[in-house]
Amino acid sequence: MIKKTLIIAEDDESIRLVTSRYLQDLGYEILMASNLKELWKLIESNKGDALITDVMLPDGELFDILPQIVEYRVNLPVIVVSAKNNLQTAISATKQGAYEYLPKPFDLDELQKLIKKALESKQNFKNKTKIRNESEKQLIVGRSPAMQDLYKSIARLSQNDLTVMIYGESGTGKELVAKALHKYSKRSEKPLIALNMAAIPNDLIESELFGHEKGSFTGAHQKSDGKFKLAEKGTLFLDEIGDMPIDAQTRLLRVLQEGEFTPIGGKEKIQADARIIAATNKNLSNLIEKGEFREDLFYRLNVVPISIPPLRERKEDIPELVNHFLDKAKDLKLEPKKFTSESFQILEKYQWPGNVRELENFILKLCALYTDENIMNEDLTDEIRNLQKLDQQMLDTENQFSKILENYLSRNINKINKEYQGDVYNYFVTELEKVLLLEVLKNNNGNQLKAAELLGLNRNTLRKKITELNIKIDQENN
Image (cartoon, rainbow, N blue to C red; front, side):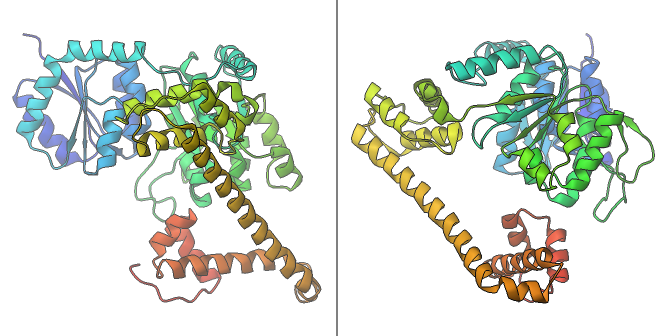
């Protein structure tokens, strides 16, 4: 009988040792990996009959590459083990194609039974994967002329490695276009790694992009590969590129020019081999004029621009999109609903400022809250009217805030000019930032962790700003 080979990806040496010896005593051959890089090499080598892997590894998170593992090795059962014993980890593992999820600490006998079951059903597992791929839902939905032009651009660009800049308002589907460009390219068997600039604290963006050595900065307790390294031979998607700070822009430009990078605190240069796709909902030309975005980086990224039309400019796609979201509602175990042609006309009259994402949320809400199979036009009209009210409230709030600032400056600009001549901008921004941080801290009872999450800042960054701005507040639970 041929011995089965198992891949164990675990950075905890003691767990790796105990698990491997236990499974070796049962007659299995063992291949071991301690990080994502080593794991991916084993995956590419087509070795192993099953994979047992931790979620958090020194150079990144398993879920960054699990979809690529499942697609590259369609008949490889993946058993995910993790100390993050929460619902989200279990859901993520299942959604991304893992065979099973096992929380730590786990019983070795239970693991052995799970491995045996996975190996016995390996052939069925492969067939299920094929079925899933054949019935895969469309990445992008729409048949309007504007979308047909977009499809043609994606088809052409999938045949080469040119850098692409995707333009589009929030909710139009920029990430879906990036996924399509990767999926149909020659790099599709390698990872697609995404990084949202707006979701990462400014002081961590360079580390996220290029990685860092252990001890290279405060909090760098272990070496970490950046997104450039994880996307090797694949695609790196830089979302919301307009939010990238100038310092990081300078370093990114150098990497794009020289084709190599050095991790923070490192000495060895690493070749950069990843296709770059960037996306933004901002007007980069305006940012260049303001000095907030480098013009030379813009030309490096804007090799082939793609624009995604807002939903208000392709309303003929709304019926197809609605049916697509109704199918999604069924997958979510929501009660199916029916729309009439009049219903579609009502939907097409609304401007949908949140674009496709807003429409999706709207349809799923209707499926969840309404019990009748048929959505009545009266109910639909009322729901649309509520959306319009919310839009107006948001507009009024924005106008009100701008008006307050305008009134304050008009009354005090001369005084400010005299007291802070040559430094008016720094004065005003500092005062505004101080008030913002103080109020958010007050509303969270001084809890810096909660305040940092709300502000979208790293906790250490918030503490630094509290000290710099001399903010005094009773702080709890820090």
